[in-house]
Length: 89
Image 1 (cartoon, rainbow, N blue to C red):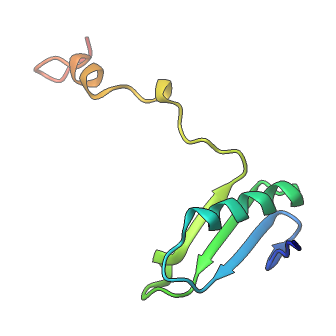
Image 2 (image 1 turned 90 degrees about the horizontal axis):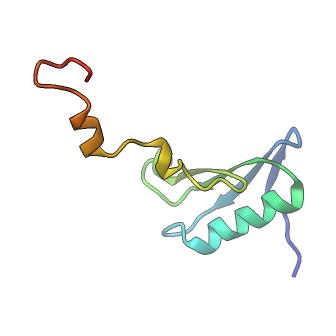
């Protein structure tokens, strides 16, 4: 199977263009493959089959797993750290 990147911008950003009803996990997997093969860190997946283009944009970063659970305080710990008058304990 041949893989072809739709657009490669400045050898830094992979742009993949789609006209599908809905972006599916297979499209994200395809973008991840393109990012790995190209060595690029960032990609932009654009689906033109939407009413508002902003709804069809998906930014992707190679090997990004999202924010760590440790980096986000839980709601209860955030509430417990402020007393009734709003002062930090």
